[in-house]
Image (cartoon, rainbow, N blue to C red):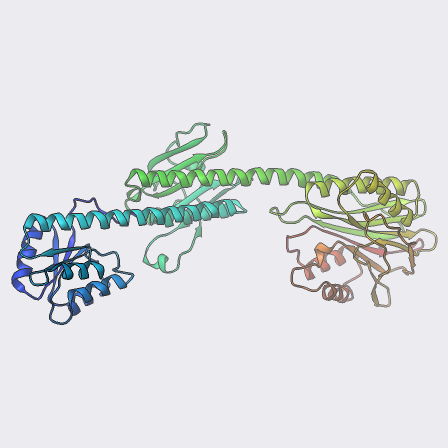
Length: 541
């Protein structure tokens, strides 16, 4: 978006509208001697056709008031009514319409000046210069406002980006839009991988703007960026050719203006490159470096979030079991899939413990997504293990966890389903505190939910006794958190029905059950998924 306004004193293209050849000659001669280019029209119709032809517009129109097909006032009104030509200054001239009423009418109907003939050459040139000065100042102001609007939009997109690739895309789009040219953004992602994007300018791209991803590595910039290990910005002018991966064919002349910025010492810099000819003024340089600095700040914010998220995810994973116990009572398989890297960590967890009474299994979900949810999940899991080691029943474990929530003044609730595979009878003792119902498939092929449940934990409500459920050897039990099946704009009941239908079609191997369910319900990345499949074998199998 280069500045369209020349300096106030530079020559202009001027349209003369007059049916008198002698008058046109006099005006043309005066203006041409001053360096202006002149375009002529003999009447209003011809003038308006010229202005609507789609070609370059003149910067000033000098319109005679008395024309053969319409008045100059009508011509002026139609020029001002068209959005394309509304900013074109109109100077009326007349040898006959010279009264105060005529001049008042002309100015009221949109003219920027009104001269009566004969016109002194100096007066004509001074009036044209004044009209140009006003029109060019107006264009510069509009251009600056437009640039600032696009700069604001580009900055907003930068800070809204949720990945390094999106930061690069937003930076390239912003520079291409603000400077009206091809732009390339290159940076290093928070995980140390190069990311870049290209926004190609030109008639075809303007009709259908788009961003291409590139393979440009800022670490191979062919000229030292000059920042050292310091923060800040710098503008370089370098050759595009030696920069590996750089789309040099998009850069006329092959010379780049590169805005280099770093927001934190020691970080790899971000680079925002455009053709050098597009950065011709101090304003252009400032815009490019401002965008580069905004890109660096947005990337640093993303980097900080990514590092915190990775740390929290590592902490969250440390709360989960490293291995599953081997038991003669059941074969176990689990899958744990955290939400996407752009989502806060949650409190989904699972547990499997051999006890004196059998095999204790649990799947739970602390409400919300935050570090607090993950920390509470860790406390609950360790408490659950302690209560299981003390040989409490599933119902008693739920009651003790409820008391723990009260004691630590937890501000979050959780759902928790505990299943004890009885080592003596083979029965499943199911105690469900508001969690999704476990799904049981028996060897005869029937599938049903164990729907009996109590209230979720954290409400200080009593829990009912565990429900005994017969599960002959070969039965498959599925316990999961809602991240597996819950989707926006989908009814949870329909999803549960489909879960039941899918389980009925799968092999009974626990690992294959997990794989089959995840294939049927691909995670959407918005919530954690904790999934446990249990194939009951029984003491004698």
